[in-house]
Length: 285
Image 1: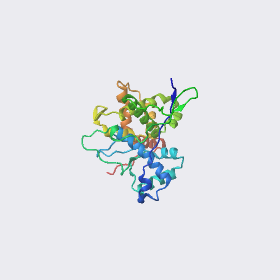
Image 2: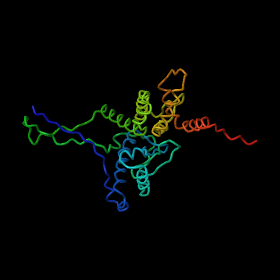
Image 3: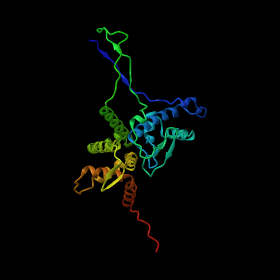
């Protein structure tokens, strides 16, 4: 029996228009690479239905992630973002303090028709596994016509890969390694939040129950994707002070994650006032 091996490799796609469009002639090589990374993340967003109220697909790419991916400083990362904006390849929507900006790619982004569900088939992932030529071992009798069988993912495998990609994205947003180093005793709960968030973000439901209310799925997902290490640190600090018995821990944790962007800033402001004895200004009579 012939024994063959082949390697599966993944690649980022670099759009040809970055080199053929005269309007992009002066776009730097680093900006092109960053755009390629964003195209990949845009595909993940579309696959999971991460869109705003208008149906526009957005992605999240924190500055510290860009620094890690491109091995550059903060100023360089911000410069590349401004360069993409100047060439109308990127639009940024600023968020509240501590929340990740929402990024839109105008050349790829089209509003979803009303009622249409986003699907993996609608936007093939730009990271595609490519089987390499089979290596024929000396002890085999393989011929030049022997080729590895096409590698196809089952729905279960595709769902697992999608879930893993989403968890990787969250780890980058949350600066996972730094968090675990800062809160070594809370790594289990951080991992639980990761799994819970990934479950929600890859789900297909139109509404998601948060607390005692059913909320639009797009809004809940947008909140979860805007979380950063600032919010997770805040949750770890506040939940450690909670002495109330929790009946539905899953709902409790999801509600905490959802509310974090709205309550984090006020919490730290109150902490500063307490620590430094700052009093609120008296209201006018």
